[in-house]
Image (cartoon, rainbow, N blue to C red; front, side, top):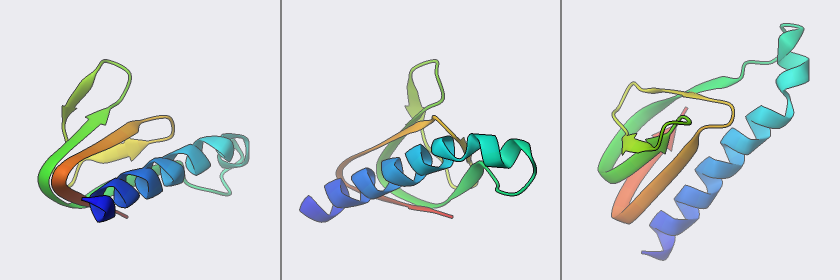
Length: 77
């Protein structure tokens, strides 16, 4: 359970970091998107309209929130 929570915090930090470099990406030097490469269990993504189930292959953008519940896990690439 602690591992899944750590992953959720880590994934949120990546998305937050992507948001902090949005000015650089506007100049084309840094991407502001990621992909959920793998999803197991309960993984939710909020792109501004509430949380919806995350699916492998979903695009994650700067500012999106990721929530991993229980024994769920996700790989953000």
